[in-house]
Length: 618
Image (cartoon, rainbow, N blue to C red; front, side, top):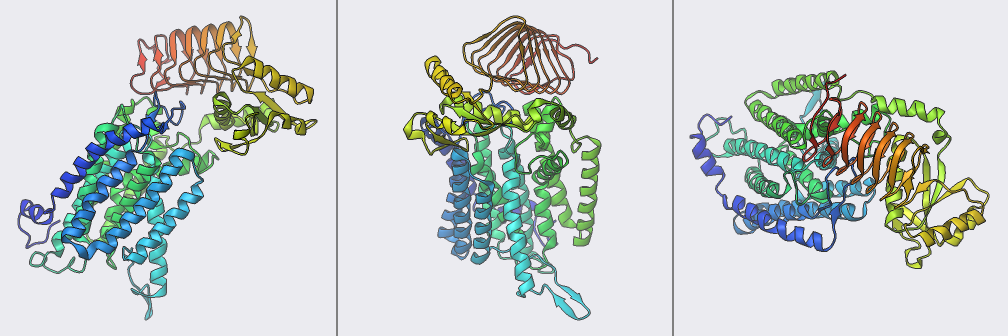
């Protein structure tokens, strides 16, 4: 790994890691800033709120961790540049500005949600800006065919290819790390390992660039050995300090802002390693260090395509989600990912001793082996639930096409309803929500959860004699009665909703697609048909059957002798007391308590979920 004339490893580290104070400042800054920004996020109500499936945490967790990471990374690097290394100032300012742009876009996405297109445009602009500032991908080998030279440094095709690859790196790495941020401590912990890998590669390159150490001057033309080393130290320290607050149970999240910024920094490292024409081995080493995020992103994309789901839609296709779905606790799933990330770094650093052609062949073999293992392990299979849902939908009234729905009301329950209908539609298309109607003039024209407030309730008359349904979504009985009268007076059919504090009596049968709102009481001998949603605060007494794809949301309480059919979801903080038969593929999310008589193939996800006794797998 080191040049033949290099001194001992300790001496190499002492020489190349001289600005050790960068590590100290970065670590101290993130340790101090994180609790301060967490307090601000709590004061300003900037939370990542749980929803039971993609966000299984038991309570709202504050954002702004990404801002702490950004400041802790960039502050010491700027101090280093201004104090002792002004030759890197232009490149560092471009890196800081690009990080600030992507951090800002991520913050907006955390708070208001923006289209992926806008974030992609920002990533393209940042990649081009880095290229203009001199941080350029140039590890493109020159090709000679019968005297014709292609991709000569500085040629038009060289510049075009370099810029295209740079854009792909910035966009790909930013989104890959963003997608990895799905469990407490996963993204920040993996980034520590990745940053250490980048630091080792930077140390290797730097050693070959020191005059008197290298035998063949392999790295003497490399410009960014000091910058890459200092940036890697800052990133390692910042991620390590943030993990103190982010490991399970996390008290603050990175958010899209932090995870996108970390992915951007990973792309910057790979570009720095590939700054020298022909330096393919260093570029491949950077990609291998990013092996886990690349594998997770590829796995999710392949699985979504095979299951005919939107590529940019959220689901549980990620590697870590599938670990949780197979019975691993949240912490164990994170630890498995840590181990795989370390393995990727070990392979990447080990290949630095090989020739480039051997490295490329080895990586192709590793890629093929990973693909085979993922297929054999069932990580990319077509899900049975997707095909079963499609077959059921073809024969169900829910599938003829989805009813158009207007939600009457625009308060908290209305938004909760809109979010729940979106989850229901992901399983079996039920309603196409057009928007809200509300008498509060201040809300008219606004967007809530990407749905517009169309106007006042009186506008419902415009939908008379159409195929639009209405659903009054408010806990106020008087207002609900008013909404119902307006709908009935205009011959607009009402979709079924069971409102808060209502009671579903004995012997009842609830049909498909019903929304059971917060605080309902469901008594005995009740059958809930498929795709029914039981929301938070509900109490289900006993002798209740939940149909396929039903969903019991956070805080619901199920007393006893309850049958939960295949692929149902029991949300976080739900309580199932006893004699509960749960179908194959069901998910009991983090925080749920299951007392006993639960089959072995049921998943109970994460701490502090609890099972007192399990039956043998039938």
